[in-house]
View 1 (tube, helix red, strand yellow):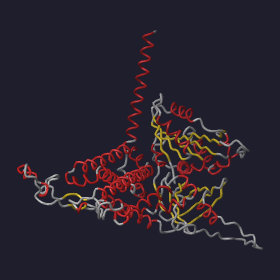
View 2 (cartoon, helix red, strand yellow; view 1 turned 60 degrees about the vertical axis):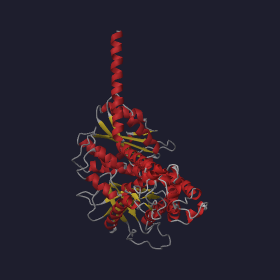
View 3 (spheres, one colour; view 1 turned 90 degrees about the vertical axis):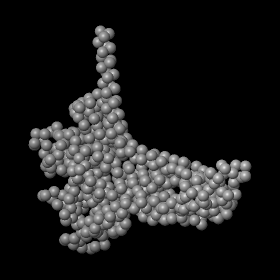
Length: 568
């Protein structure tokens, strides 16, 4: 009995260690892009720091400025890297094209593309952090330029005389003035990017973020001043050699060997920032120009439907518009704002039988309120006689896209779990429409759909779609293909969906919040040793919980891969 118990414990430990090893390898594989980016930043910082710390051409400059020179140049190298990378995730058309090519066949590569927004934010945060380091180091450099003014090497000085006011040096040099403007623009962009600002007034975020054009122009000029200089004649003037007035009579022979052949010559570095930035900047400008041409023709608004809970459905038509389920478009309505663009997920895609496509938008914020008022104006009460036929005039509307999103991967798993919170159901509505329309050629064999709403009325947005898909699968004798769970979290004034046609939904409607761990354990036991794609679009609380559950090992051997959909 004791031997059996020991062997059982050894087996359990072996299984647990195997699961931990698989989880660790999966985590490393999933985060390999992040590791690569962190490694590149660390390597570039250390390489530049050691170059200025040990380089003979910077000997005299280091004696004057100390470690401030090394830190300022090392942080500048990291800033150059991230200022070039931060633009690439915003090339949406390019990322969508790459995602759709056969060259990107691995799921890991496509999942890496899904994190483009996260990568953009990471680059932006690193730019802010290393800008603080860069500015702090240069403030020390400016003080040292004033205090350690060199009479032996006048060309090396940035100050005009010893003891010059550091503030005057900053305000009278090109690097100083441009640096102040760069810090101001970066501060405005960073503070307006916070979630509270975007939620309170999205226009502030939009307009300040477009200051990046001015930021890059000033950045190109920032290095023109040439504040830091290096020695060009190291062979003729080895660092530390003796000049004529430094030689002594007692050690004349040694002095002859260490005597300088000529005076030290210094020159500023050739500006390199444009070498880093020009390529991605040109690519981004070309991509924006392509998007401008593509979106120059306005769409035709076919129908506008008002749904419960301040949700409006918009059906549109555009020539040669093609999209895949899970993609999104960017709307621009000049009648509301000529410069503002807002992303919305497609809830219906054009097909061979139906060329229209649609979106659902929730009325929250100034832009959506003004846009809804133009789509559905209040009826005029001053008309004595109502016309028999009143033609509705819709505002001019432009769309840009479609663009790729993580929800496109729903069909590339054998088993997928779609979790929606409130209006976050929109990315998955198009997936359900595709199943209803009989799309073929995908791997998906089972779909779990979980929708959590505060109010019962929210389920009416896509109630007919859910019922139609349920009836279709039952007629095809595939009831297990689509597993539906609806949760209403608000218990006050709760009413049931009493209509007969909504009976498939009422039997799957639960009151309260989902018990996510039990739900995932059930899915894991039903789909043992399979790779399950988990897709979430909703509040951060749900996303964090699901992400944590996906990363935890399971005894069933099921692997859950987390994919998050987010906008704004």
